[in-house]
Image 1 (cartoon, rainbow over the protein chains, first blue to last red):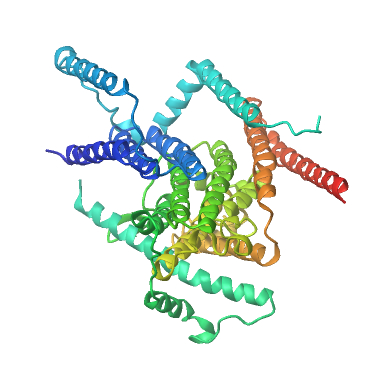
Image 2: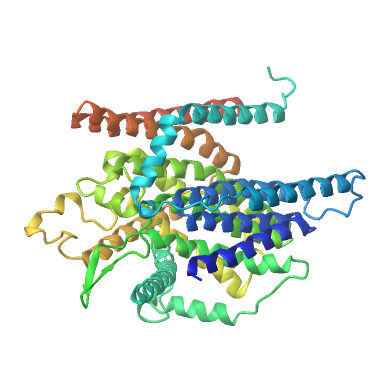
Length: 174
Length: 382
C-alpha cells in the first residue's frame, strides 16, 4: 500500500462525510461550509492526479468565489435556520427512483463495462513543469478558442441580465 | 523518497512561521511608533529599550485576558473563525522565494518552502479562501454590527480580488511564467514596477483593500460598527484576528515585492557594481536582506497611508473597485500584452517602452474622469 492510496482513502472519507453533512445539516451556513470542505478535498484529488492547475482553479473559483457568494446571500437573507417544512409529496418517491437508477447505472459501468486496460493514468514527469501548463493554455486558446469565447459571452449576458432584472427605474428619472 | 527532504521541509516551514510571527510582533511596534511620530507623539517606549519588549508585554496581557464567549453565538463556527483567518495568512508565504540557495554540509538548501509551477494561482486561491474567516466571524457572533462588518468584508474582498487577479496576470505575461522564482529571475534586468508602473500602483491599492487596511478598513469602521467583525471577540481569539491582519500585511508586501519590485534580487543597476558585490547570485545571504528591506519600505507606505488618509465611504469604495480599478487593470493587462507581443513579433525592443507610456496615459485619463464625475455630483447637490 503506497502513501498515495492512503491519502486517497482518507480524503475520500472526508469528501463523502462532507457531502453527507451538507445534505443533512439543517443550518444553511453549515451546509455551505460542508460544501466548501468538499470542494477543497476534490481539489486535493486533482493534485493527486497531477493536475495542479485545475486544483488551484477549483479552489479559487468554487471554494473561493462561488461559495462566498452563497454564504453572502444566505447571511443577507437571514435564511440560515429554515423551519422544518413539509416536503412535497411526490418528491420522496421520485428521489428514490432516481437514486436507484443512478446506483444501477454506476454498478453497470463499473462491473460490466470497465476493461482492465481502462486505467486512468496521470501524465507522469512533465506535470510539475511549466510545459504542461503551457500546453494546456495552447490547447485552450487555439483548439477551443471559440467555446472559450462563447462561454465568456454567455457569462457576460448572464451578468447583464442580472443587472437588468434587479435594477429598478427610479420615478422621475428618465 | 529521501527522509532528509521531509526534515528540510519541516524545518523550513517552522522557520517561515517563526519569521512571520516575529514579524507580526514587531510590525505592531513599528506601526505604533511610526504612527506616533507622524502624530507628534512618542509612542510606546517604556517596556525595554525604546519599547522593544512592548510586543511581548502585549502578548502576555492578551494571553491572561479573560476570554468571553457570548451566550447566543454559534459556538463551533465562532471558535473556528479566528483559526480560518490565521491559517491562510501563514500558508500564503509558502511559495514566496526568500532568496536563492546555499550549501549546507554539501546539501543545497533553497530559500523557499515550495516551488510550484502554478505559484501565482496558489496565491489567488489562498487569498480567495481568506475571506471565510472574517465572514464567518461576523455571522457566528450573532450581532448585527459584527454581521455587517463580515458582509462588508466579503463584498469588498471579492470585488477587489478581480483587479488583484488581473495584476497577477500582468506579472505572468511579463515574466512568461506562473512560477514565482521565474518571475523574480525575469526581473533581473528591470523591475516590473518600472515597465508597468500603473499595474504596480493598482496592485498596491488593491492589496490595501484585501488586507482591510485604511483607507479601506470598512469591515471594522469603529464609528459605525464598533469593531466590526471582531466586536464579540476578546483575549487570544481577538489576538488571532490581529495576528492575521498583520501577517497578511507582511505577506502581501512580500508578494508585491516579488511580483513588481524584483523580489529578493538587487536593484537592477547594482548587478555589476564592485565586481558583483551586491549581486544575489554571488552572495546568497543578500537575498533575504533585500526582501526584508523592500518589505519594510512597503509596510511603511501602508502605515503612512493609514496615518494620512481618511476612510472612504462604503459606496465609493465599491464604485472605486468596480468602475475605476477593474477597467483600468483590464486596460493595463491589454497594453502590457500588446506591447510584449509587438516587441516579439516585430523583433524590436522599443515597443516595450510603449507599455509604461500608454499605461500612464490611461491612468491619467482615469483620474481625470474620476475628478469630472466627482465635480458633477457635487454640483448637483450643493
